[in-house]
Length: 491
Ligand SMILES: [Zn+2]
Image 1 (spheres, rainbow, N blue to C red):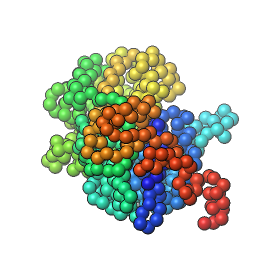
Image 2: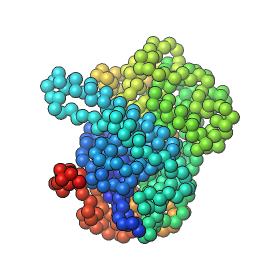
Image 3: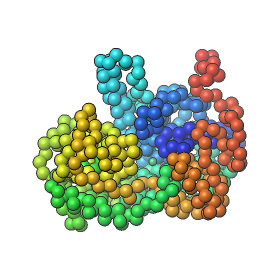
Image 4: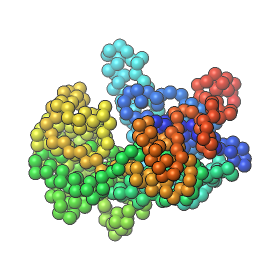
């Protein structure tokens, strides 16, 4: 039972784990997730590197959930030779379509404008082509098998696979993999037990090894009730200021949590009803899937849906479909809440709203997502006087509110609660900054568990303490001379 982690070992994006498993039918190679690296040029350059294995040699791909950092390179895997099946839950498949099509569109649009600019400067050779286009996404979607159901075991590539509820976003699963040797748990991203929409993760039964995400393994989230109060107070202050209220939000989960919270706060009279503009076609499409798979959500939301209500639609909601209408919003007079992506403000429609309103003291910017220090949002949060937006220097005069408690990730208490029912497994840490994982190791030990950090790209034997050198036998690395010989040899 061997694991090689290629992304999300010592970082939080680009999740991709190759498992080499012994089954009664022989050795099988199963890839868990195939995510995109995000967050800055250097990180994103890694998306263009060859896969460290031959995609054609994989027996199957399993997905934990539909976030781009877990599925964003799937179309690339397909264009580079993967022809097997991609197994996931039905909501994950539905969201994956929205996420991957949006990703292809962003890349092709970005490439077109970058190449135009580069041509004028005479260095078009430095512009990286898109990783994939819409046609590649459609080929990928055709391989999706949305048959995984929580608690039901399926035999996939000779391995017994049981998905269980992870409580992170709609459709998110952790995966139990049974071979004759052992039982392995791949956590994917685990949810915050106090999230606004998702049911709690299902406590796991005893396993032999856990590959565990550690995004927030070093911290404790603020209680949910306190987060809601902070959000309500920020909204009240903002509405009094009379200007625009900008809420940058990621399209999946965060946008739906905020819509649902706005509806509840306005319906209960805690916050005055003012117009809410949802200016993100991707968030609107994703919200439709939350509506479709409402049975998966917390009882309050599920019951509202069954009673024919729309828990994601404040009575003053306006959906903004086209970018022309989005731009017309700049001329809209009076107070209004504008929700737009992306969450870190590094692109998307939020940018032109910021350009038009960030310099006005009557504007309020309510931040509900994590901001990486190098992102536009990160610079605003850390108190920059001016920021560059769409080629223009803009003064930051808006009131900035940061609400930190809306996280969809498990914190340290959640992770320990998760492990508390898993027996005495060896815990392999992934999907965290190195300092966070270092800090979590002694916590594991204090809880009677043995842990190790999975080193990027190296093979680890999940059942043994050692790190065997080299890669699993017979693994041919894409791009290597061995692989080239095989490809040109017409195999
Ligand atoms: Zn995630």
